[in-house]
Image: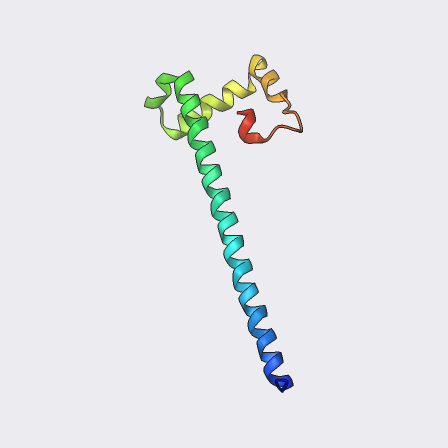
Length: 95
């Protein structure tokens, strides 16, 4: 014997709710993966800068920022900001 319509409707609603929870979990996993990738990238790039500018360890964050801004604004380094990454290269592979 077939189930009554109201039971079928409730079953569908339960499945919808389950899928919505699954979607939320997957989106949270993606956000967490994105955050971890960004954190890793920031740490790696900070380490690169620190290896190039070893005396920067003694600077405050404000002084370090001013130093980097000055370097970027100077003519020789501004050419480096025009570097383009090939479209078929993932950002993780380019660095």
